[in-house]
Amino acid sequence: MATANNPVGERVYVLTDNSVIKTILGVNQEFPGVFSTGVSPQLKVLSVLGLIKTEPVQIYEITGKPTCGNGIIEGGEKCGEPGLSECPTGYVCENCKCVGETTPPARSCYPSAPTPWGIVKVNGGSGGAGVKVAVLDTGVYKDHLDLKANVVDCKDATKVGIRNGCADNNGHGTHVAGTVLANGGADGLGIYGVAPEAKLMAIKVCGGQFCFGDDMAAGIRYAAGNGANIISMSIGGDSPDSQILSAVDYAVGKDVLVVAAAGNDGPEDGSIDYPGAYVKVIAAGAIDSSENVPSWSSRGVNDGDSIIEEREVEFGTPGVSVESTYKDGCYTLMSGTSMATPHVSGLAAKLWQGSASDTRSYLQSIARDIWAAGDDTATGLGLPVAP
Image 1 (cartoon, rainbow, N blue to C red):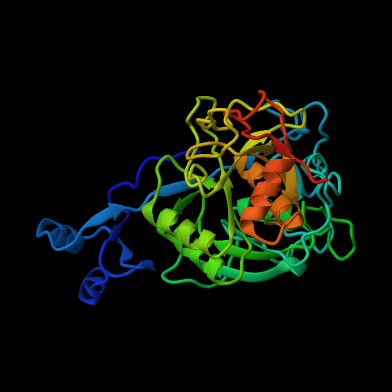
Image 2: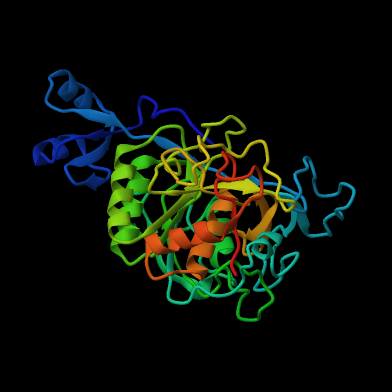
């Protein structure tokens, strides 16, 4: 879902490396020749005097939300409505799921199915060994039974500097991570992601629903500098952020494949969000279990030439009523291009071809048409399915 440009009173980039100015203004995140800081009276004075140049830090938004259903586009289901049972004593209806009122003990809850419909649709559920996926999101509940064996890094980029800690107070990041690489747990009774043998770098770049561009840029650079093969961002916004684009350039230069959500602003052509709209990023649109495109899935400006360019959607993957891991140690359903994105990231891990560029080309080669013929605005080159 897109958001407006950075509002007054938030953060800006200051285009200088001057240490005195950094001391005066305070530094949130540092980049080559640039740092971010909060808007302050001192900043305004230095700007008026012409001593600094600034750019806005964009604000982005996670692109998934809790939902109900069976993978078909249908609205309004709640606990207790026809087809869904009432919650038993001691449980409450939360995000369309019956969950315990207190944190459940180990393996007190189970997914509806070990392999969700989206994982089946892309022929996932195995592979990914030796591949490291960085999920940049709201954090991850790293002690989830279906994730904890795969976590190799846990960092927080939402504070000054990047420090340990990736607690997920939202649940969105835990859900995304599960779709990429949940491994069913040691007992095999949990849920499986696309590439359950892959390793997870959980990098928190969103304090909640909203995400600052400077934190995202710092997270991208951290992931690329610390061994990530794939970066997955289920996040989007209307405008490009200069430091995110620079960070993506840095990551691609280090042979990292970058995947992001197309956005939830459809159905107009050109409604695609950044950073997914950037030509060096794979943009994932959403489909349901019948391979229909939901009206809210953002569209690109694809011109049918089968060459992915700026502001074009690359793939359409499962993004409606997707079940995955959740922050309470259990499971929930969510919909959005946020849910489509990790299906692509997981496939990239499962089918890693030795380099980012070769993997992207391979995914393009195995995609099949599912909407309009050829390179279309909603699903791009189509649905990639593992052989």
